[in-house]
Length: 429
View 1 (spheres, helix red, strand yellow):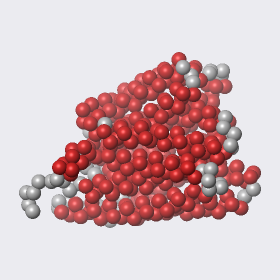
View 2 (cartoon, rainbow, N blue to C red):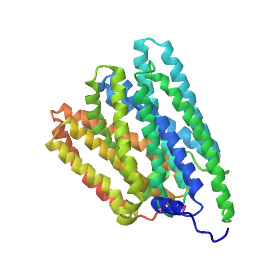
View 3 (cartoon, rainbow, N blue to C red):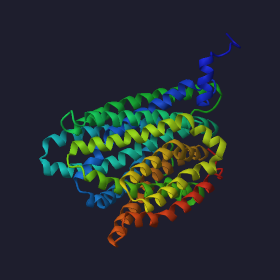
């Protein structure tokens, strides 16, 4: 009946999640989409990381270089697909291509001897390092194409909850079954199923937003190809100060993450049993994502609204500065684990939703071309700086404490960049 008041429970849900009338179904489907994507990835993540450790921690810088080369080759191909096909089509093509890759890895592993499995594990590491960035970047590009800027500031945090629950679920599946299903590679089939369901959720979500836009008398672009040049993303990244700034922000984040990744890999290498290593890495992901979940549910949208975009984007760099100084004074395993856990939780719950909101301010071509370029190629370039920087500082005799102090000034520059980014208005979407 018109004018009927919503139930008290619905009122509480709307206030808690900053939800407006008519947004519920689209919000649920967005969260479900992110749940499936991150669950699929976090089933694979501990398997990938264990394979990297099995191949030798000393070889990780070369593994990172291989990943960067692969990114250079893949990005133009993805941009070509984006230019030619409508949004729903290229999302389905990308996810099903990755599903085919996973099935291939599954069968190859069963026919190779241990020496061959080491090399296949390295190939899986390279592939996984491409997969995780592309599937998540596609998700956020899709979100920025359907949600408005004001909605993104309110709702990205709660949409992120779906992803965090998915990450916890995926990591928990691997953590529990890694020592119970024989070879952990068997679990990749779980990711195949999750990705296929994600494709169907994308189609349902597109239909929902198409109906909403038609009801508002707005143009529906979901069936239109993005068009443009394959190299448009790179050109715009170089020429647009805001896109370049986002690229720099991602670069700083990745450099820091890679330094801590190496430190954690050295800890994992001390565990002799491969299945136990996989379980350890999975449990770390569960703990980190549990902290992220609490923050996303109760703090994210409030932090962005209360602090504003500039201060919100500076929160993570300031935390990293404190973390490096702490690691410099107390270079222990506990500090490494806590530091990396807090860094990742703060990124997923606060910094990333704020950063992704910026892409609602750019045009459609930049969302699907410049954004994946930033999230993949620029991200992996940061890996290179972090990987070889970590190895180089170790080669000249710096201990973990010295490495931490050496990287600390980077966080200060990163904080200033985040503050500047938050003040940008962007181009017309």
